[in-house]
Length: 583
Image (tube, rainbow, N blue to C red; front, side, top):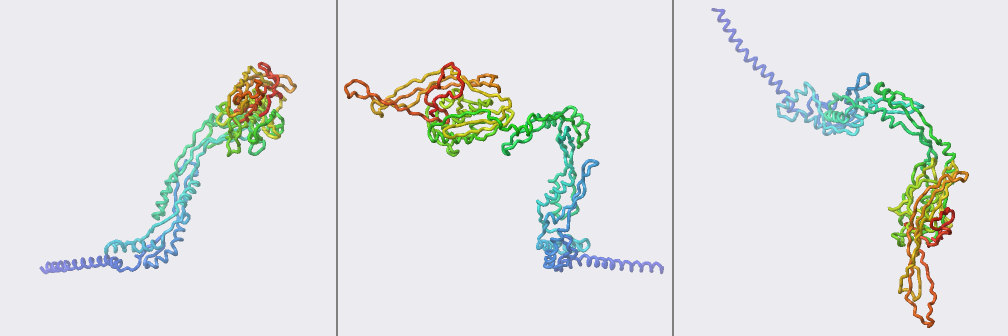
């Protein structure tokens, strides 16, 4: 009975101690929980264990933090770096690796004032209790504040390019080179390249968040261009080319050897080679026919052909002839090149220095810029014929010009007929074109190893005489006669190129061209009939004053005075048998 009572008393005492313990625990918990809240609420400094870029600012006032960050922040960022891990590539390739991007190199910066304010505000944005929790978290774990960061994006791109240059495995494209009698070919091989744009985005995001744990990227395979040995053959194969005259340098340059090889056998070699491997293909080399030394020895050595014509007319016409001659003088044509008279002179305008002179347009005489330049094109045409060069394009004048043999003229106009010829020799040719002392001279220099020469002949197939037409002109004195328009006989002419060997023996005689010149009536203006005041009933004599048109930039005319012995159906050597060169 007594034991029972003792047990009951002990139970009552135990029940009394439990509430006291609970209260004590609660009190301690409250103190633990409230203390950070109270400390946070009472704090006049940045919460403890707060740092910016590794700089401890916990416990500092705003001004102290500002001073510290202003002093230390630039160096703190400059010493940090972002690891970049690169992976990928084939087994055996030295690909991948870990690279560093220095924050100093990319110009990472933070505003010290803004950083200090961010450190002060860290954990203070909530209420009494949340601020306390933040305060406690900082004490236990520490707090890193990331202010707004700026950096040089161009510098980021440069750093990524630097890493790519070191980490990428470039694509090996097919290439070839000739060394001696071997063609060395490199077989294509895949490369492994990083996506630089994607890596730039990752780096910028990590730096902006100040996450320096690192970024990674994987190299991606890049296939080379597929190339067959047939394509290499098309690229490498060439015929031998002779030495040539470099117009810009004014000197002879070396030609190239011809290259040939078996493309089928070379394809077998490529198929058996490992990617990226270089293999050798035997080639056959063909030396040029004309070496640099030979070209220099014969360059412009011979006078191939020449022609001189008399120049007449107005001072403007002579000026245009002189200007055209200067444009052509010194022109060099390499073998196979074509000369264009229009392209060489350019458009005949006042801005280009040309003056107005008589020219034929639609059969009428008009003033036109460049009148007279056809005399140079015609003189040059005959020089080209005598040089045995290839004529590409030539048109005769509407009316026969008197300064050149029949069928050996060449008219030109801008946007119309052009005179073109090609250098069909194996050596360069040079034009010497001058105007002096009333004469235009065109001479072509080149290389004539065969000693051949050319003489031109013409055959007048038919002629159409002009008629004289009289027109009354009441402005003239009675009985006066005045020539308003020259009359020209029309002709159909065949010209022949006669080639002679060095001993003067005729090698060939071929038709060069057929030329048709139109006839044009002579027009005489006549004054009113004169009254007979003498009573004799006889007509008094009157003078006829001829009017001679100037030659022009289009069709060129001359007074109608046929050359001696020029009769229909008769063949005449070109020599000096020309019509009256009055114009």
